[in-house]
Length: 323
Image (cartoon, rainbow, N blue to C red; front, side, top):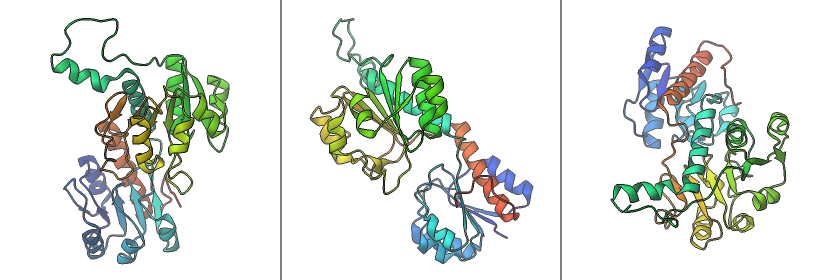
């Protein structure tokens, strides 16, 4: 009997957890996505009441209608814009995610991108490997920007945004500005952070890090108008969702020197990049959606999703419901 349909290759520990709990599963052991039609067909045929999905699986009304037996969609991600939550709710299907477990890891990467773009590490590394470094110079080819003591703007002061702000404030003596719907009392009290309107954050920040979910409100919240407000020496970092930035406008801003640089882990038409972005190197660092990409964190995410699925199957409240 199949209780859980696992859409992608997962950890042995997850399978062992299901085995120990007596929960049957179908496991797509290939780490490649099933085409939507094939996923719908196989899910329906399996009869599984639980779907363990990843962020590249589109869980929409069409898929849900193909599998009326579904009780829970356990998404292996903190974000769930790949799941039509409203459609699931209307069908009585629980949707869960994996918050908290990836907070510090993603904040690590956000700050790594900030540092790498500021100090031009992605340019300096191949320069060194190619044997181009011949002597120390006062005006070396890869002079960067200081980070310590600068102003860090956080857009979206949730768990990951706050963790990134903490790194800047406590580790690098940065002044922290943030934009969000609510005050963050700990940040205000402990780090001297200040909640400001979006325009103030854009105009005053030396580094801007995006940490918002993808919604109608946040889609293209950074476009030509917003980029033009930023300092010409500013660097923007995105580890949230690609469409938060209008990528064609970002490429133009980088090409024209409107801003100094960018550190990107997500892309508007992922896995594709906007033409021209790959050819930008100065103060630009690009990574392939590895925000949560440590072995420990991906395992914790997968185990959390498995526990969410198991709870629903056992008629219990899951640890991390979305709806």
